[in-house]
Image (cartoon, helix red, strand yellow):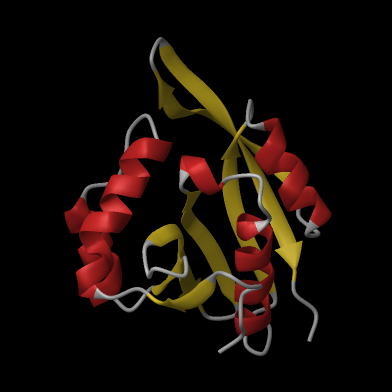
Length: 154
């Protein structure tokens, strides 16, 4: 498995990580997934990975669904205290390397207002392909999602 830059480590998500992952999700999302949703992703065989710090604490995660030669980033988050340290970029680069032999493209949705994430995805080769109107809930209604796609050449 590829290695994250020190001091972080990338590894498969385990049942023992679910409480920490759900807590991180709740810190990151207005409408967070439940611990059961993460458990279902694990049991269904989705590509579920966590990034840990030197103490073994979960600081980031990603859930990717693969079908045939396509993959979809369903969820990705970095703990608030660890953001802007390159963890998300390193995590996505490594997952793209893992996917590349069997996957031709990777998809995701991102909040239209999340300029930092959109810029990161663009740096990694994602391009906008469309919009999903009112996709994300907000405190005062809904927000559009930008659909993005990245080709993963062999």
